[in-house]
Length: 497
Image 1: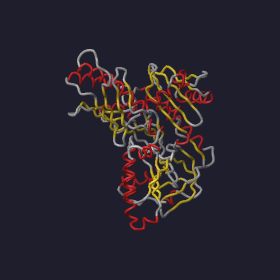
Image 2: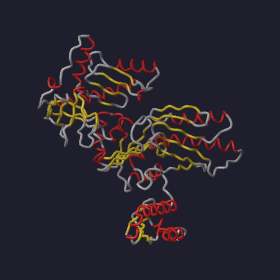
Image 3: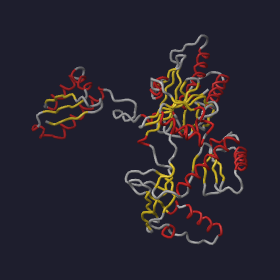
Image 4: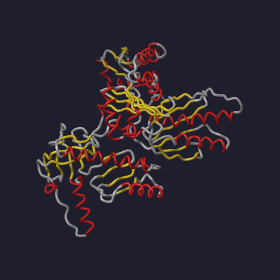
């Protein structure tokens, strides 16, 4: 059975999903980096630019937002109708569609970047757990990621039964709707329609510019998307947010309301369940297995690689048996780490080589079994000729490491730094290069001064002292050293005095 812990502060919201007391998922959302995409505003046209076929729309932000004629829904609808009847009418210019001061219902499709304002569209879409609602469109579509034609047809039929013929609006069925029941889809349809009715009602009562709808917060998305029948409790450590989430659940996801609980313990919620320790482990490169084996996880721009090693596990019988047991345990650990770290894209798992086909099939079956608990769409290939398991996992959000960490300024994300000796030799080469460039005018210099980290200076004073003396004699100039405590090991400067 699942338990969900929600830790809320003014700066960030953190969510942990526990299965039998073991953390399976971690979600983090920070107020400072929460985007605008999906927000719906009643805006006011500030300026129309016929030359650019665009308009600036005031939506109450520091900078006016940008709307191109191609993103005006009525414009696209008219163009499609012209194309359909074959009359080839010219598409109406933006100055005929919009006028300065007009109120306009818009949705943000791209966050502001640098000096550019947000990008807008007048086609509204509301995302639910399994459906995307298009209130201005009558089309019903299915995500192309659902490739099984029988499943696509079944989902469209299910949705058609839930939508009365006279009802306006269309839907796109998301990949998360695979294997959904009638009740699941019906709950999503009801939630999205209620949301749209509220947006329309508020838009008639408020002046422009006004924010009408903000994309759900992480805590609200958890109630909508993550809570299932297997969830026993959702603990929230903020009374104010507990009351707000209760109200949200009663209105939009009433099935969840009874499972909400306010946590008022003396110890912080995440401390009680040791979640911060799990976060630290989820940021580490090495993951230890109970048997003594371990995983090495490397996340790169192109893909994530996971290497399985036996470590100190020697087993009780044969080496093949040791390898098999380690791989079985690793299959479960890898599946958990994918969810915990939210790793997406291409993932390659290098299990320890197994001699028998039966062992390989058993490990692959176990891997697929534990991956089936993951709510994120993925595909798994069998073992390749090199003994690797290749898979893909849909990117739903930034990985945990990308949210909480940044590349090391010392190694620039390489994960390693040059040795002190390597830096010493680079300094010697640079001094020799500088001395040669000065030529005869080097006599005007008194000395070369090395500014470097403590480790580099120590090496020059000890093992590389002779090298420094030989270079000093060769160029005929004194070479001094100065420790810079703020320099990292690779950083140095050569000052000409």
